[in-house]
Length: 504
Image 1 (tube, rainbow, N blue to C red):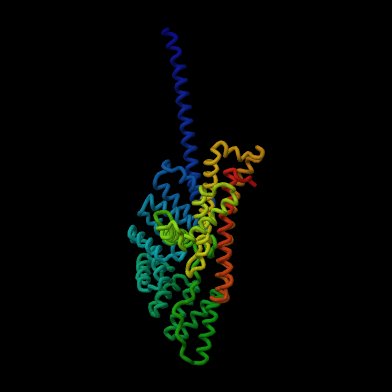
Image 2 (spheres, helix red, strand yellow):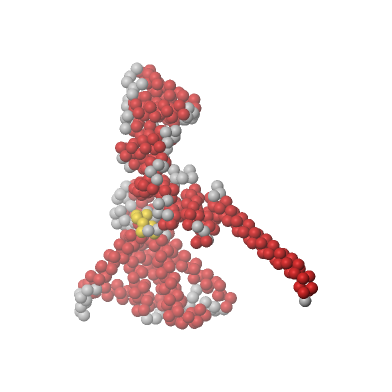
């Protein structure tokens, strides 16, 4: 036994060593694979291509608590920048909101969100975010410059000048900060200060034609025509196609030829219209909705507010209209009876069964749609059904209600079996039709109401206020017809679900 144990111990030691080596190797491979995957995700999250960056950052965000808090914040900010390049500002702001939920004092997230608000023209929100960012880090020159531009666009030139001064003091070598401050001095007719800033910019960036053009405007304001001409000629040498410089030089030459005093110089050189990040011009979309305010991460749009206002008005009218109803109907009771019996009659004609279980849903749906479709005719109002979210919400309500009534009437198994009628091969088609008909219901309502409002707005813009009155009368008819069609189709879907009419 002793001999056996002596000779077997090296073998055991060797096997133990090999096992440990194998485990260590596997551990190193797993660490290497993990590190490579982690590195690959971050490489894509920081890529120049927006789509690649969104994919990589999304993978990091999806890992949740397996990533550090700092990593998730960086991924949200990086993905926000990618959405910004693609022009999807809503998603960009949503990502920055999530980053700020994790780190409310993230200066970079606050300043990025401020710049997006500024690009969208929401100057008050931009200024508020710049304020928060500067409270976190008061040494960020770009934040002062961004807030100064927001104040300038709001025509608050004193605050804008104070912020440009701060930006230049923090970064005296910046050409763009001095150029913006020079333009602001020019707008305030402070020609000496404008010339001083433009001169520094020309010295640091001698090939910047915009600085020469701005200084020429300041010289004209001081009636120094010769120096204005020299700067305009220098600007045209740098950029022969500079139309504004050509026109200004022609004016100066005419003044020199006439020997007359120059007219007052323009307060500021022409400034190109603001473009959103990424260099693309924003265009209003019929699918876009105006955001009025936000409740946490949820943006409350104008159609949402209008929808709740209509629901509140209808609730109040319903409560007032049904108070103290008498056995012997008066005029108010007669009107209510006509409306209720009319809707019940239409429901019964379609589904050929007792309409009372379906009256609350379908009656409310018709009254709300009729009111919502016609609300766009009020001055300053916009029909909520002309924006996609309201028709989508209504179609979703109908979709859920159809299946609810189907299950309640036929039972879960009986209702599921109805999808296989008339043959089992129809099962996938019947399932797909549930989605497609709901989508069709939404698009029909949205398209008709939106096109009607768009047509009236276009005619008003081209022909004046009173010309589109016939079209507005037609829009009343279209609004009522669309409410009727939406309600009837919903009734048909419910009838098919409960089995009172055949699907088709």
